[in-house]
Length: 61
Image (tube, rainbow, N blue to C red):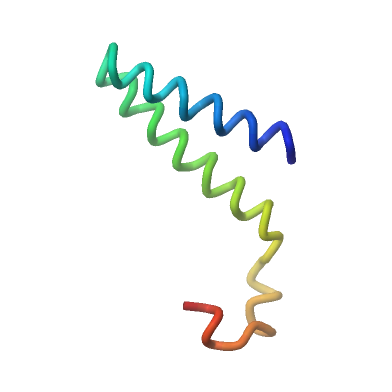
């Protein structure tokens, strides 16, 4: 989990650097950042669809 967190941070720093130097590659890396960020949040929250039915409606929003 710690590797994923620091890996995501390193990707974000690399993306910012590439956006300043090469916009096309930076935008492509930004898409990778989004996918890794979503995966990281899913792993961090450890919530899947089977657990969602036990959460009250207010927390689903």
